[in-house]
Image (cartoon, rainbow, N blue to C red; front, side):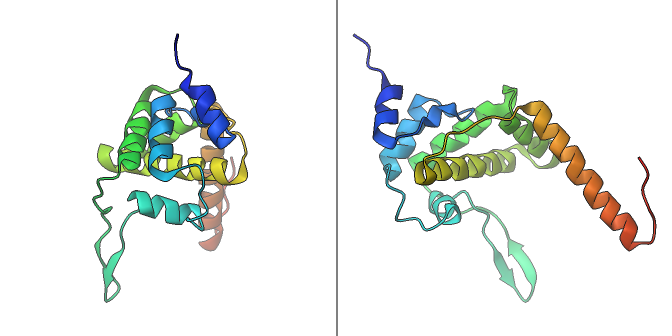
Length: 166
């Protein structure tokens, strides 16, 4: 007789955390074992991500950034989310495209931490609002990224007195 962890987690939380790409049953179980299904002790998702140790630190003195490294924490939930974020490398989803775009810009450990931070925010939103996660797909993410780039380029060109034509 096999134990169905997915339905037990759904009964505990009211949402299916395994619908998020990269998050499997064991990852969701570790996060819930560390935090619990009640997220009222975290006012916002930023507080939750900071408690996990997935937020960049801001050590600034005299307007100069001294360090922006994340704090080291032995949190098992954060370790599980980092492993889930690393698994997004081959995922054909919006989260997978997000992770690959981060890897192109940053080094791999920072990209993994940033993707784990996004996973933590998604989990927080699902547990507090009770909404289901719906993946928009890789093509949707790439199209939105293209629109954002064009919008910002157009604004910069207008600020310099030019106009862009596609």
